[in-house]
Image (tube, rainbow, N blue to C red; front, side, top):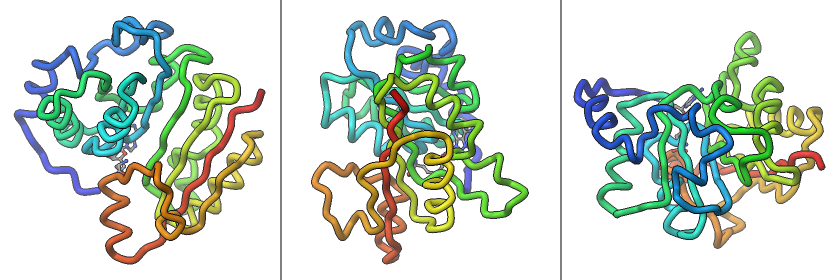
Length: 213
Ligand SMILES: C[S@@+](CC[C@H](N)C(=O)[O-])C[C@H]1O[C@@H](n2cnc3c(N)ncnc32)[C@H](O)[C@@H]1O
């Protein structure tokens, strides 16, 4: 992904600390306080420019949504979407998702979303893939029992690797699609990368992995 340097982004994120949560660790186990309401908690990892998380938040206005994104120059666009559209049920964390179990308590999250994460195709980079077992351990920890990890990618190699990784780890797989857009799922909220890839005629792969009971 090309990341443009935006020197002003940090200042803007700091200015809107009611949406871009600066001290995510302080809310571990207490995210309902940030939203001022008890509601199902959805978390997207690598939320990029925020089209998915804001789209979901509009679709499910009674639920709470958190997007985690590493790059400030990208997450600032997600912040703009929240501000421009007056979305009140989204919070953003500008940090590395490796800190997931520091941000959220055991069994705190109802659903996780991993959309078009980097495939890291070289074998020696396996540990960087967000579906590598060390990440799955974190997902299982924060997800409620029976909670769902929703995964989408355009990359066949990453999809095959991830199905095996989920299954080896003990997640139960369901709703596997090898061509999501052909299936025309009415509930699908399209991400920025998803639109780009599907316009190029690439297939979109999707599955749900359920945390063990
Ligand atoms: C290929 S983009 C996909 C963006 C968006 N999910 C979409 O589908 O349009 C992957 C995003 O994940 C972010 N990312 C990668 N590794 C991350 C990590 N460890 N923690 C947080 N964000 C990460 C990148 O900065 C990038 O914005």
